[in-house]
Length: 416
Image (cartoon, rainbow, N blue to C red; front, side, top):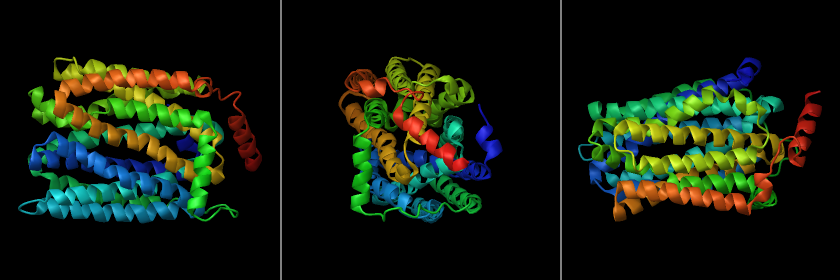
């Protein structure tokens, strides 16, 4: 990997450290909530509905988080949300410690976690172009993906073991501690105040960001292709049931970690992405491989073959994420970066949330393998259709795109 952003930017180092700690704890909770729901209900639909319950808060607060990221100090927003996330994780701990944990509490607190995370995420994303040079944004995207994947491997794998050995309360309690440690590191990052001419956070400013995105087919392609791929092929809600079918209930954390293992391998060999300029085509091809790998997992007869297919899927998704982040960070003006980050959050979060709901409902109709296979096949078809319908996105080239050239010139002028 290109480690230039870590060497050159003090604030990026603190962002990475804070994010790594938070990511680890968040993945513990991300896996523990559906596991606890399965323990309490034994229902496919209930596990899938957790993701659907998170969807509306994610949409509303993701968009609003983008608006306030352009209007207020982004670092301050992150600190406040991090404190709120620690409080919600503490409430999950208390519920898990009850003699009879309440299902309704999970349906209340899981959406609240999604709301706070969505409110925070646009500010975090919008801080990156402020602390990293323009030419190193692809490298920064790869490093952020690497950080995410470390948490995605260690968190789910440990969550399965901890829940089995000590119960959900312990994993939720660890999450509380990670948020507190993350707050200490984030406090060291320099303030990122808004521009002097920044508009207040209103519905009008939010609509301005949406109009900007709609006018740019290259941006819409990054959103739509990823949403389609995740909606049809995301199947995390199936993993507790798939582990039972494979006669390996103890390995459910391994299934949750599989995609992250593949993504980690892809990220540590990501130096080649610096020489890729047609990022739109890169997203399309990677999304297609993601769908094919999930389709193959539906036919894999053993735990390790399923793991390998899911790892390939995760590697493809990581490459897609690097190219999408590069387009976003290299072409979007700073005064709109927060609002567009809110839209980006919807694109990469709503697909998995809705996809898990889709996976649960299809599994209830035809079983776990049917849901996996049909989802992978539909994903490949949807990505092909999007590629045909969005020629400007398909032909995007960072060397010639007007928005990329404008932003490069603007940032180079500001640096001098």
